[in-house]
Length: 402
Image (cartoon, rainbow, N blue to C red):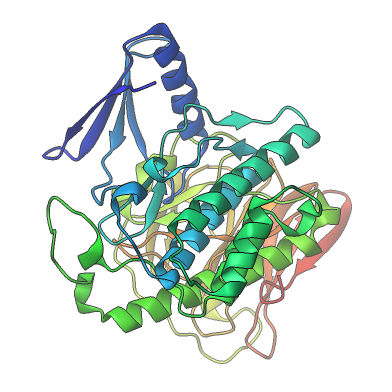
């Protein structure tokens, strides 16, 4: 089925229009799924036109082409793209959403080479744990097969074995989920990276180099370090917290330009924090009890839905979210942690966002009956996170170990 898709480069939008009743149903499902997730690795829904089913969708344009038009790439780029995609897919799975149509044409690339999933018309929420397992496994298989097709001949043997294992029949599904795949890719290909901006098709800058003057080597190092850290920490959290009812998707911490994308999130979608002011990391003093950098060790007030921190002002995705700031990375920079009481999900961040780079929170725990958070400073300067529960003892989380 080929839908009518029109790109308006001047406005920076893409319009998908239904021409048949079947296409209208696909657009309706896509709109529902895109409303339920807010993620920099997923195309952004801007508007729905018409009734139900809708006549069309208005999506934010992703201007770097798609994976089918990227051309041949080295194993490092394939592994980096695969790890980024697998992390996005894992976050969707944590929300209970399966894409069900992972293929090269549905993986867009932004102007900086970051992959963005689109075409959610066949995406589904599972109705049972067994169905969810099958759907997640199908997504991982499809992604692994796609990456095998992209991998150049003579690629790293360990990466090939990993992808063949993930693409094959399920025998031990516990170790072959999307987050496992992300971790395996960045560890089996040490130079994993995203494609250089100069190598990504763009109507605006077809030959321009890496943004901000950053060197290719520096960008590759930053990408692989970021992917590896998130992959290892989140997979460890999955293993550790199975007894706490499973996992959820990461919180999105983004700049003011994308803050509104998560403002209508459902109780099951990740909260969005948007930068509403200037940002600069704040250094703390000595690790005394509740130093100034930890903002009193209790929840930060959010009048009017705005979090005011030393690093700037942030718009919350859900008014009921509980926010504290602490030194989860064992540095003198305080970073937010978020609790959503309705689900018991707790996320921490390892960086503040910039105007160009949103941040995804790492899931630290899912704690039933959780209602508030507190920071527990340590002499080492590595803060612990205390989750307060109604009529039950508090649960202490070490974000460094999770």
